Image (cartoon, rainbow, N blue to C red):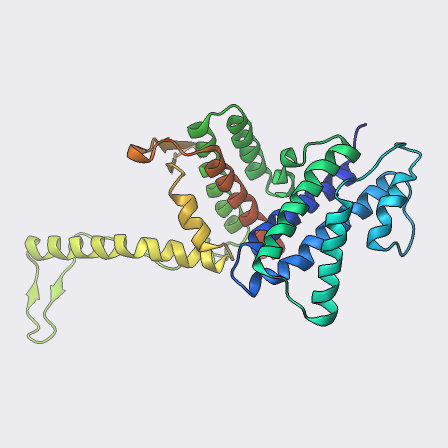
Length: 315
């Protein structure tokens, strides 16, 4: 049974919410406690979508009533959602937290994470005949070039072409930052996310001793100063990059991990990209889950930029 675009978009959003809350559930207490509420929300969104999809939706359905309601569907007869009792425990724990302030233990949170994971894995197949793990969040990316590169990265990853997939991911991230900045250029072409830079001294520069007023114009001193400026510039580049990413709302700690996997890329004069192959040494080639992290990082970064987008109009 083919799914319409809106249903697929809602399923994709539910997976995005699930991925977000799985990460939240791994945080230390008491931060992880809030994940219980979002786990419940993600399941409820799935139940609501299922009811609409099967044409059994009605107003003011209680959480635990969805199992019987969905079983009454004529569109797909004989359907029975799984994980009913584990979701009953989730619902009860959510009520205690929301209405009485009773926080679940760390062990409880881990149990609910497993239950919700099983709920989505089993019921996405039962209702929509889809593999929940294969639902792609790439469609949430609104930057066309970035989305296309991420699709290429995912295709390469599916074929176990690790390095090729990482190359596409690296290009996708560079495109993301450039495409976002390109719509924010000020009147004279400088990005508001530009944090300065140092340039080499022009030829013929004179260096004067402020105290004696005696000009110093020896090639030795000029060369030493040029080297100093170059060293300072190279030292500032990582800080400038960090300032830019943080100002864009991108998770810098995740970026650090991301940067350990992707190859160095270079933009050619014609706008094409070339990459430098990495030497993995004793670490060995990254695993599939490492590449998946990189793909998801670019998706999350794109969503972060999309949440607050603006353009600077030219006079």
